[in-house]
Amino acid sequence: MKPINMISLAIGICALVTTCTQAPADLTSRLEVLDVETCERTIVKEFPYLIEAPNWTQDGKWLIYNSKGKIYRLAVDGSGEPEHIETGVAVSCNNDHVISPDGRMLAVSSGTSTDRRSRIFILPLEGGEARLVTPEAPSYLHGWSPDGKTLAYCAERNGEFDVYTIDADPSSGAVEKRLTTEPGLDDGPEYSPDGRYIWFNSVRSGLMQLWRMGADGSDPRMMTDHPDRNAWFGHVSPDGNRVAYITYHKGDLEPGQHLSNRNVELWMLPAEGGEPVRLIRLFGGQGSFNVNSWAPDSRHLAFVSYSVRGQEFPTLEVPEFRELISRDGVQLLDVRTAKEYAAGHIPEAANVDFRSRDFLDSVLATFDPEKPLAIYCRSGIKSASAAGKLVAAGFVVYNLGDGFLAWQADDQSAD
Image (tube, rainbow, N blue to C red):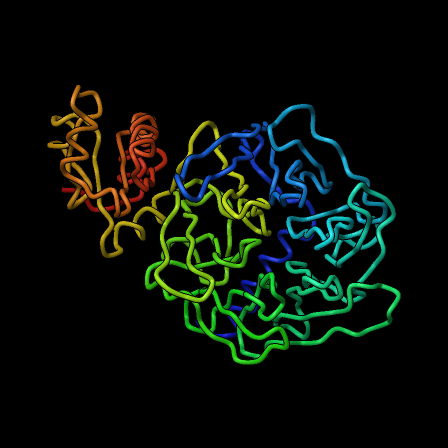
């Protein structure tokens, strides 16, 4: 992608999170914990509204998250009600916030009541007056050095998004330092626990991938190389051994986008490099895994998954669906009756009747769960029910909203 296009995309994305993120009214957020050894998921609490980006406190007792421009904390076991953390003038907190290495302070990215552009503020972890750190905007916090002296963040300056650092003491009068200069979006900078490296994600290879550089910006090295995925937000475990991150399927968005309500995956790789492994699939994206959410035990991760109208898969309109099924490796399933299928169907679609008793077994015998599965029915209702069952069975599913009727109404070809 050309740098100018990437810059435009990045500006749009960061503008999206400067104020509290807009979300569908019928969205449910699930705050979850993942055991990376067993891949067992535990739901801490469900919310009938948008929450984002959990941090795990160093004492292991609390999860810190943002919602509707405010910061909250909740007991890790889900007991009690969420507690609001007062953030003073930082009244529009987004999903970029970090706890200090000593566990005493909280840094947030937020706008104020007079200027909604994101800047970085520091305040006591229990809440209090927020002190401004970065006068320039927009600035999006991601990392705090292990010695507590320096913050690392993504910032747009003169139309280019890069990694910067600045003194964490607002009274020092220090100016920010630019660490990356490559064209295109560099984002998500986070320190390794030993302070030697900064992990970040960059589009410089063509797709968004994880990179690692010296804490001074020297010797950048690409750490992931997914040919079919965009990798975002590498979070280093407290013991320094592993890095967890989130990925989007290549065709679902542009490399510089990290959007909500997408099919995404959590992955993990050794901190020194090596073969990555997929941990889980989920419906989420923006807000699911923006900040470091490792537990102090370096075994558990906190994240947020979402559903819209009870659905954990994307519902696409005809143009998006048409583009999806044109990609290599995408499978196409018609879940109508054999009679409906024979009367007309989308070219190259296979047919398995959702009402058949052996529906799931037939799909599992015919389709590869490792490849995206596009499905449709007559009006989109039956296929939505089918999609729910297929997601539970491990498929990555995309549903055609309004179904084959919409496909025909859009003058698309049919067999």
